[in-house]
Length: 299
Image (cartoon, rainbow, N blue to C red):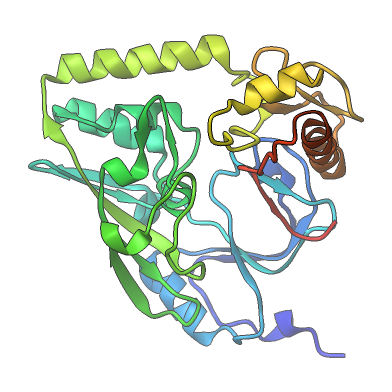
């Protein structure tokens, strides 16, 4: 039987078969990608998508800070953007342009250096621009929709798509943008301020994260979205799950909405813990917790 991977389009980047994805995620768990594609640049990504058979599924992986890759791996092609072509950040006037693979914190720092305020909260988001666009990422009182002007990327057919802020239809941790767009670049708007003042606010956010979140652990971002009128961490804590082991996984003693891999967790441990907590909180309070962390691949 012919393997679809034997007739993949030629690329200038890298195509890796059966590549373990755990090392690419903060949780350090999960199976392999059938194919991992690391494009060399924008054109390499575009040409690959245009030539890839439509029936082959495509999944995008950023720095893996907000994702659980399931133990059975991910079917089809996983695309990971990295390197200078996808991670650059430039500032012109009040406008910041950032590649989808740029770290949110790097965007915040570039804005501060240029004396632009409004993007400080990005220093508290442990992910990339692409992920922030997809889920209207935010923290400490700010959200992506507060600063975004526009973004562009390629759809599954390799066609360039550009969206303005209004096209995203942003709500809390959700976007109505077409799910098949692989973001390449975003444009943000800041407002003039003293660089030192902007940097001081970033330092304050960074220090707060250091003391309130388990950032030195194998963790992800917030596990659950905050239900209207409630804090997820309080619901998890009050249900008795803070620091309670489930296989090799648990909710951090430091912050009860952050799951951690204590060292030997599987993806099934992490997802199972999350589902057990959701069921318990629902039974005790009637409140539905919804995942903020993405789970991808086969169980």
